[in-house]
Image (spheres, rainbow, N blue to C red):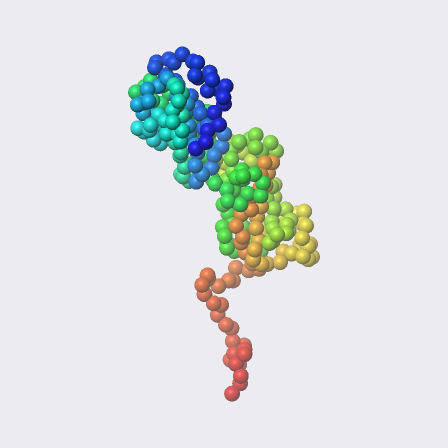
Length: 280
Protein backbone atom coordinates (compact mmCIF):
# COMPACT_ATOMS: atom_id res chain seq x y z
CA UNK A 1 0.00 0.00 0.00
CA UNK A 2 1.57 3.24 -1.07
CA UNK A 3 1.45 5.90 1.60
CA UNK A 4 1.11 9.62 1.06
CA UNK A 5 2.80 10.67 4.30
CA UNK A 6 3.74 14.37 4.21
CA UNK A 7 7.52 14.91 4.08
CA UNK A 8 7.19 17.61 6.73
CA UNK A 9 5.57 15.09 9.08
CA UNK A 10 8.37 12.57 8.55
CA UNK A 11 10.99 15.28 9.10
CA UNK A 12 9.33 16.41 12.33
CA UNK A 13 8.98 12.85 13.56
CA UNK A 14 12.61 12.04 12.83
CA UNK A 15 13.77 14.83 15.15
CA UNK A 16 11.02 14.55 17.72
CA UNK A 17 11.81 13.46 21.25
CA UNK A 18 9.78 10.25 21.75
CA UNK A 19 7.54 10.19 24.82
CA UNK A 20 7.00 6.97 26.71
CA UNK A 21 9.41 5.17 24.42
CA UNK A 22 7.91 6.36 21.12
CA UNK A 23 4.92 7.83 19.26
CA UNK A 24 2.18 6.71 16.88
CA UNK A 25 0.51 9.05 14.42
CA UNK A 26 -1.86 8.64 11.45
CA UNK A 27 -0.13 7.89 8.16
CA UNK A 28 -1.79 7.54 4.76
CA UNK A 29 -5.08 6.56 6.37
CA UNK A 30 -8.60 7.68 7.07
CA UNK A 31 -8.77 11.21 8.38
CA UNK A 32 -12.55 11.44 8.63
CA UNK A 33 -15.14 11.58 5.85
CA UNK A 34 -17.35 8.98 4.21
CA UNK A 35 -16.65 5.45 3.02
CA UNK A 36 -18.69 2.71 1.37
CA UNK A 37 -19.58 -0.83 2.36
CA UNK A 38 -17.82 -3.48 0.31
CA UNK A 39 -14.84 -1.23 -0.48
CA UNK A 40 -11.62 -1.58 1.56
CA UNK A 41 -10.49 1.21 3.87
CA UNK A 42 -6.77 1.63 4.50
CA UNK A 43 -5.81 2.33 8.12
CA UNK A 44 -2.14 3.25 8.41
CA UNK A 45 0.26 4.50 11.05
CA UNK A 46 3.64 6.19 11.41
CA UNK A 47 5.67 4.99 14.40
CA UNK A 48 8.66 6.92 15.71
CA UNK A 49 11.07 5.51 18.24
CA UNK A 50 9.12 2.36 19.06
CA UNK A 51 10.85 -0.98 19.43
CA UNK A 52 10.74 -3.03 16.18
CA UNK A 53 9.21 -5.85 18.23
CA UNK A 54 6.18 -3.71 19.14
CA UNK A 55 2.82 -5.24 18.15
CA UNK A 56 -0.11 -3.12 17.01
CA UNK A 57 -3.82 -3.46 17.72
CA UNK A 58 -6.49 -1.68 15.63
CA UNK A 59 -9.92 -1.28 17.20
CA UNK A 60 -13.09 -0.03 15.52
CA UNK A 61 -14.78 2.60 17.68
CA UNK A 62 -18.33 3.92 17.50
CA UNK A 63 -19.67 6.88 19.44
CA UNK A 64 -16.38 6.93 21.35
CA UNK A 65 -16.63 3.34 22.63
CA UNK A 66 -14.80 0.19 21.40
CA UNK A 67 -16.93 -1.84 18.99
CA UNK A 68 -14.62 -4.66 17.86
CA UNK A 69 -10.97 -5.43 17.17
CA UNK A 70 -10.06 -5.25 13.47
CA UNK A 71 -6.57 -6.61 13.95
CA UNK A 72 -4.17 -7.53 16.76
CA UNK A 73 -0.59 -8.73 17.01
CA UNK A 74 0.18 -6.74 13.87
CA UNK A 75 3.83 -6.05 13.05
CA UNK A 76 4.97 -2.50 13.55
CA UNK A 77 6.40 -2.47 10.01
CA UNK A 78 4.48 -4.33 7.30
CA UNK A 79 5.33 -2.09 4.38
CA UNK A 80 7.17 -3.21 1.24
CA UNK A 81 10.22 -1.14 2.12
CA UNK A 82 12.47 -1.97 5.10
CA UNK A 83 12.55 0.23 8.15
CA UNK A 84 15.11 3.05 8.01
CA UNK A 85 16.00 4.93 11.18
CA UNK A 86 13.48 5.45 13.97
CA UNK A 87 10.47 5.89 11.66
CA UNK A 88 8.32 2.87 10.78
CA UNK A 89 5.24 2.63 8.54
CA UNK A 90 2.46 0.07 8.89
CA UNK A 91 -1.13 -0.47 7.77
CA UNK A 92 -4.19 -2.70 7.82
CA UNK A 93 -7.22 -2.89 5.51
CA UNK A 94 -10.81 -3.10 6.72
CA UNK A 95 -13.70 -3.84 4.35
CA UNK A 96 -17.01 -2.82 6.00
CA UNK A 97 -20.06 -4.99 5.33
CA UNK A 98 -23.68 -3.95 4.82
CA UNK A 99 -24.27 -4.37 8.57
CA UNK A 100 -21.63 -1.72 9.28
CA UNK A 101 -23.55 1.09 7.58
CA UNK A 102 -23.75 4.02 9.99
CA UNK A 103 -22.07 7.14 11.39
CA UNK A 104 -19.70 8.19 14.16
CA UNK A 105 -17.03 5.54 13.57
CA UNK A 106 -13.33 5.96 14.34
CA UNK A 107 -10.27 3.72 14.30
CA UNK A 108 -8.00 3.46 17.34
CA UNK A 109 -4.43 2.34 16.64
CA UNK A 110 -2.33 1.42 19.69
CA UNK A 111 0.80 -0.40 20.71
CA UNK A 112 -0.21 -3.54 22.60
CA UNK A 113 2.29 -2.71 25.35
CA UNK A 114 0.44 0.57 25.95
CA UNK A 115 3.39 2.78 24.96
CA UNK A 116 1.61 4.82 22.25
CA UNK A 117 -1.77 5.24 20.55
CA UNK A 118 -3.98 7.54 18.49
CA UNK A 119 -7.62 7.69 17.35
CA UNK A 120 -8.66 8.75 13.86
CA UNK A 121 -11.16 11.46 13.04
CA UNK A 122 -14.83 10.30 12.91
CA UNK A 123 -16.10 8.80 9.66
CA UNK A 124 -19.24 7.18 8.23
CA UNK A 125 -19.94 3.98 6.30
CA UNK A 126 -22.66 4.01 3.67
CA UNK A 127 -24.22 1.69 1.11
CA UNK A 128 -21.99 1.02 -1.89
CA UNK A 129 -23.13 2.59 -5.15
CA UNK A 130 -23.02 0.62 -8.37
CA UNK A 131 -24.17 2.94 -11.14
CA UNK A 132 -23.07 6.51 -10.44
CA UNK A 133 -23.45 8.99 -13.25
CA UNK A 134 -21.60 11.70 -11.37
CA UNK A 135 -19.21 11.15 -8.52
CA UNK A 136 -17.41 7.91 -7.72
CA UNK A 137 -19.17 6.41 -5.94
CA UNK A 138 -22.50 8.23 -5.86
CA UNK A 139 -23.82 9.87 -2.69
CA UNK A 140 -27.25 8.27 -3.05
CA UNK A 141 -28.59 4.81 -3.84
CA UNK A 142 -32.05 3.70 -4.94
CA UNK A 143 -33.37 0.62 -3.11
CA UNK A 144 -36.88 0.48 -4.66
CA UNK A 145 -38.18 -0.36 -7.21
CA UNK A 146 -36.04 -3.48 -7.53
CA UNK A 147 -34.93 -4.99 -10.84
CA UNK A 148 -37.87 -6.33 -12.86
CA UNK A 149 -40.47 -4.92 -10.47
CA UNK A 150 -43.88 -4.37 -12.07
CA UNK A 151 -45.56 -1.05 -11.28
CA UNK A 152 -49.15 -0.59 -12.42
CA UNK A 153 -50.38 2.65 -13.93
CA UNK A 154 -52.66 4.56 -11.59
CA UNK A 155 -51.65 2.51 -8.54
CA UNK A 156 -49.14 3.40 -5.86
CA UNK A 157 -45.48 2.58 -6.46
CA UNK A 158 -42.81 2.83 -3.78
CA UNK A 159 -39.54 4.62 -4.51
CA UNK A 160 -37.05 4.32 -1.66
CA UNK A 161 -33.43 5.38 -1.20
CA UNK A 162 -30.50 5.67 1.16
CA UNK A 163 -27.91 8.41 1.01
CA UNK A 164 -24.92 9.84 2.84
CA UNK A 165 -26.00 11.79 5.90
CA UNK A 166 -23.80 14.78 5.21
CA UNK A 167 -25.60 18.09 4.78
CA UNK A 168 -22.49 19.56 3.11
CA UNK A 169 -23.10 17.21 0.16
CA UNK A 170 -26.75 18.30 -0.11
CA UNK A 171 -26.88 22.09 0.38
CA UNK A 172 -30.38 22.27 -1.12
CA UNK A 173 -31.56 19.49 1.26
CA UNK A 174 -33.62 18.08 -1.61
CA UNK A 175 -33.58 14.85 -3.61
CA UNK A 176 -34.89 14.94 -7.17
CA UNK A 177 -36.60 11.85 -8.64
CA UNK A 178 -36.92 11.51 -12.42
CA UNK A 179 -38.34 8.83 -14.71
CA UNK A 180 -36.31 7.50 -17.65
CA UNK A 181 -37.21 5.08 -20.42
CA UNK A 182 -34.11 3.43 -21.89
CA UNK A 183 -31.76 6.38 -22.48
CA UNK A 184 -34.37 9.12 -22.56
CA UNK A 185 -35.77 11.16 -19.70
CA UNK A 186 -39.57 11.05 -19.68
CA UNK A 187 -40.30 13.59 -16.95
CA UNK A 188 -39.99 14.55 -13.29
CA UNK A 189 -41.58 12.45 -10.55
CA UNK A 190 -41.00 14.58 -7.45
CA UNK A 191 -38.53 16.66 -5.46
CA UNK A 192 -38.34 15.46 -1.86
CA UNK A 193 -37.09 17.34 1.21
CA UNK A 194 -34.29 15.55 3.10
CA UNK A 195 -33.93 15.17 6.87
CA UNK A 196 -30.37 14.68 8.11
CA UNK A 197 -31.41 13.85 11.67
CA UNK A 198 -30.83 10.12 11.09
CA UNK A 199 -27.89 8.06 9.88
CA UNK A 200 -27.89 6.68 7.33
CA UNK A 201 -30.57 8.83 5.76
CA UNK A 202 -33.28 6.57 4.38
CA UNK A 203 -36.46 7.77 2.77
CA UNK A 204 -39.27 6.86 0.44
CA UNK A 205 -41.84 8.43 -1.85
CA UNK A 206 -45.19 6.94 -2.79
CA UNK A 207 -45.59 7.59 -6.49
CA UNK A 208 -48.99 7.53 -8.24
CA UNK A 209 -47.52 5.52 -11.12
CA UNK A 210 -47.61 7.52 -14.33
CA UNK A 211 -48.04 10.94 -12.75
CA UNK A 212 -45.26 13.22 -14.02
CA UNK A 213 -44.38 16.88 -14.32
CA UNK A 214 -41.89 18.58 -16.61
CA UNK A 215 -42.53 16.07 -19.41
CA UNK A 216 -39.61 15.84 -21.84
CA UNK A 217 -40.39 12.70 -23.87
CA UNK A 218 -43.78 12.98 -25.58
CA UNK A 219 -43.17 9.73 -27.44
CA UNK A 220 -43.89 8.01 -24.13
CA UNK A 221 -46.75 10.39 -23.24
CA UNK A 222 -48.30 11.22 -26.60
CA UNK A 223 -51.38 12.97 -25.19
CA UNK A 224 -49.46 14.72 -22.42
CA UNK A 225 -51.24 12.69 -19.73
CA UNK A 226 -51.08 8.92 -20.26
CA UNK A 227 -47.77 7.09 -19.92
CA UNK A 228 -47.20 4.20 -22.35
CA UNK A 229 -46.62 0.86 -20.58
CA UNK A 230 -43.36 -0.94 -21.23
CA UNK A 231 -40.10 -2.42 -19.99
CA UNK A 232 -36.79 -0.68 -19.36
CA UNK A 233 -38.05 2.13 -17.17
CA UNK A 234 -35.60 3.62 -14.67
CA UNK A 235 -35.70 6.10 -11.82
CA UNK A 236 -32.83 8.51 -11.38
CA UNK A 237 -32.18 10.07 -7.98
CA UNK A 238 -30.09 13.20 -8.12
CA UNK A 239 -29.05 16.03 -5.87
CA UNK A 240 -26.32 18.56 -5.37
CA UNK A 241 -23.35 16.23 -5.54
CA UNK A 242 -24.20 13.12 -7.52
CA UNK A 243 -26.87 11.11 -9.28
CA UNK A 244 -27.78 7.44 -9.42
CA UNK A 245 -29.82 5.21 -11.73
CA UNK A 246 -31.74 2.41 -10.06
CA UNK A 247 -32.35 -0.95 -11.76
CA UNK A 248 -34.79 -1.18 -14.68
CA UNK A 249 -38.40 -2.09 -13.97
CA UNK A 250 -41.72 -2.56 -15.79
CA UNK A 251 -44.72 -0.25 -16.01
CA UNK A 252 -47.90 -2.16 -16.86
CA UNK A 253 -51.41 -1.10 -17.81
CA UNK A 254 -53.05 -3.44 -15.28
CA UNK A 255 -52.16 -5.90 -12.55
CA UNK A 256 -53.70 -8.81 -14.52
CA UNK A 257 -50.31 -10.27 -15.40
CA UNK A 258 -49.05 -13.88 -15.47
CA UNK A 259 -46.79 -15.05 -12.70
CA UNK A 260 -43.08 -15.16 -13.54
CA UNK A 261 -42.22 -18.37 -15.41
CA UNK A 262 -45.79 -19.08 -16.47
CA UNK A 263 -47.53 -18.55 -19.79
CA UNK A 264 -50.82 -16.67 -20.01
CA UNK A 265 -53.86 -18.86 -20.41
CA UNK A 266 -55.37 -18.72 -23.88
CA UNK A 267 -58.98 -17.61 -24.03
CA UNK A 268 -61.10 -19.50 -26.56
CA UNK A 269 -63.43 -17.45 -28.70
CA UNK A 270 -67.11 -18.26 -28.95
CA UNK A 271 -67.54 -21.58 -30.67
CA UNK A 272 -64.36 -23.07 -29.30
CA UNK A 273 -62.18 -22.29 -32.30
CA UNK A 274 -58.50 -22.05 -31.38
CA UNK A 275 -56.79 -19.22 -33.27
CA UNK A 276 -54.26 -20.57 -35.78
CA UNK A 277 -55.74 -24.08 -35.86
CA UNK A 278 -57.37 -25.08 -39.13
CA UNK A 279 -61.00 -26.10 -39.08
CA UNK A 280 -61.86 -29.75 -39.71
